[in-house]
Image 1 (cartoon, rainbow, N blue to C red):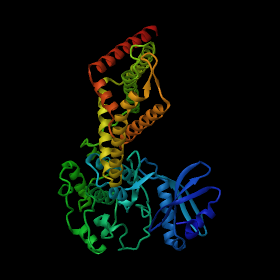
Image 2: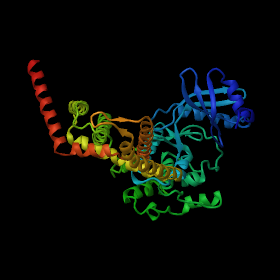
Image 3: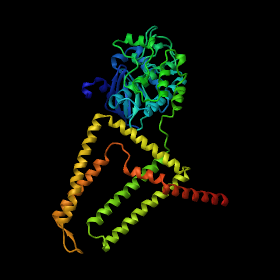
Image 4: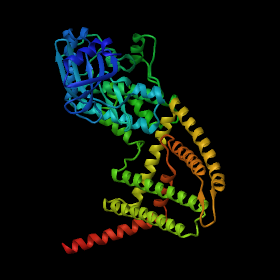
Length: 492
């Protein structure tokens, strides 16, 4: 929708001119429209939520919207979308908040399907921690649902947004007595009955959200809101493992406890729920940044060494210079570069040891990263568009690789002429060789572009550090570092 067709955006641009540059609409909801904009003073992207003009003129709704901004602005937590500022004018009411590059839970499940156990455990812990933080400050969200939880792209971090109907537990209630507020599919029994609520109501809603993340459907569904509310009040929630039998029983139990009808039977706090899920040890182990860097650099160095070895083999196999002086020079260069790569890897081992990590830590980190890649690949390939693209890339890579690989030997055979000691390639042969070499390069590039996979270099690196050579290198580095420390202490 262009600014001409969107009066609300036109108003926002007019009132914030010189401070924010509005780029596009991010989404619409019952309490406003969200736009992506750039904060011109800080040069960063922000999200701006604007209350429709026809609602902003209503005093109660305007008060509720301003309260949302103030409540959210008072919260500072890595799993809560941060509010930066409020824009309040005669015909505009908006607040500026942190822009999260990602998608909400409903979009994530629609695109890639329900979560696996590891991802679900992390998601529930992130959101439980965020709610526990807010509850400890007297704030109840009251509308925890998939649309209000963002999953950050790249990190997978869950972030709660839109405290649009949150309120301080002691604040005056803007809703009338006997009128429930929230989203029926994710509403707690006490909300459905329009009774007083506390943080345990949000945990019930989180249980509903967790059920949706695990199965792709809410625990209750009906053709009318009234029937939905009655189910929340009277019908026992189904178990997650009825639809996902492969999920751990402990995770099923945690969601079931959050869905208890009686608030006293639920987790007392968000932290308690997060701790119960953490005790299941389903989340992938955290990998220290230095170990991730060591993994990355080692794999890159090994990839360079493998590529260099392949180039050197092809050169010696087809150039006819294996026993010549030029061939000897090429061999010396290869050995020099290879030795440099190996020495750099050993120096990185010393750095890792100085940081307090041992060979076992490196191997555990490599295994964890490989599992992260495997899970990420499974999730990505659940997307039908990505599956189609990956299959097309593989077909093209195989075709180019076969044609190029089969063409190189005959081209070299027929295009290279001259005496054994003075061989030369004809210009047409050089062009043909360049073309087929480019085809092989494209094939390799397309094949390695397959989404998030453990590469050959990563596998070989893991084997090296887990093997006898890797243990010896680390043991030697540890002995040298211990000796250096002893000398430093004696000198002091």
